[in-house]
Amino acid sequence: MQIPTAKFKNGNSIPLLGLGTWQLTGKKCRDTVKTALEIGYAHIDTAEIYGNQKEIGASIKGFPREKLFITSKAWMKNLKFEKILKACKKTLAELGTDYLDLYLIHWPNKKIPIEGTLNAFAELQKQGLVKSCGVSNFTIRHLEEALPKAKSLGIEIANNQCEFHPHLYQKELSDYCTKKGIVFTAYSPLGRGNVLEDSAIKIAAKKYGKTPAQVCLKWVLQKGAVAIPKASSRQHLEENMLVFDWQLSKEDEKTIDLLNKNQRIIAPFFAEFEDSRNNFIGNIFK
Image (cartoon, rainbow, N blue to C red; front, top):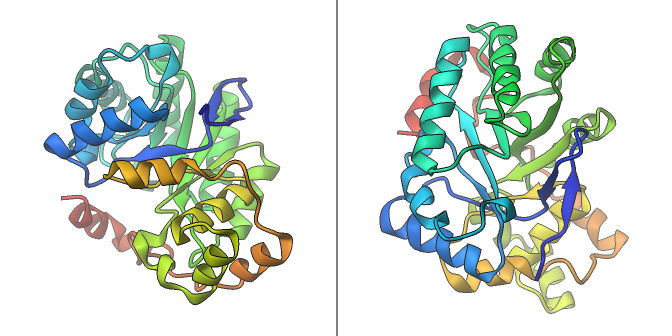
C-alpha cells in the first residue's frame, strides 16, 4: 500500500507514517530498515547522534532514492554555521545519499544563536543538499523566536518533531504548529509502550478489532500529526501500516484525549529545567 502524505508549505510532501530508528543499531537496524522498505515504508527517521546512519545507508541501497523520504537531525552541540555544514555532509556520506528530504535541529540550544543555525540551513538548501528544514523538541517560545528569523533568510520551518502520545497530548503546541503551517511529527507515539497498557486503549482496541498500538497511532494521525513509531519485527511494521482505512469515532477520540498526564518520557526534565537539559540529554543518547 502507498502511505498517505502531508504537504509542507514549500510544496514538498512527507509520508504520514515513518520508521523511527532511535536505539536501532548494527545488523538489527539494517534488517529492520530493509524490511520496512520492502513492505512499503518510504519515510525513515534518523539523526547523527543515533549512531546508525551507516547502517541505514547500507539498507537503502537498491531502492529508488526519489521514492524515499529520509530525515536526519543536527545534534545540539553542532549548531554553529560551519559545524552544521560539516555535520550535514557527514550525515550525507554515512547515508550514501546526495540530499536529505528533511533536516532538523535536534534540540534547541540557547547557548548558540539560532540565526547562525538557520543561515546554515538556508545554505544547505541553496546547495541542494536539503529539501526541507525543520526543528525538533521546540516549544512555542522557541518557535516564536525562530520563525521570523527563518523568514528573514527566505526559508520555511516546515516541521516540528516532538514527543506526542496519549499520555503527553501537547495540544497547544500541536495547534500552534497547525496555525503556522508547520507539519507536526510525533515521536514515541506509543509512549515507549506505556500507553498500550491503558485500559481505555485496550477497550478501544477490542471495539475496533485492532491492536492497542494501532489505536494509539490512529489517535495521533487523527490529531493531524505524522507518526514515526519504532518497530523491529516484521509483524509490528506491518501492523503499524494498517491504520489508514478506518477511523476512531469522535467520542472515542475524546476519551483518549482525556488520558493525557503531561507525562514526558524522553528527557522528562526538558520543560521544567531547560538549563540542565544539556547533560541529561547527552546522557540518554550515549
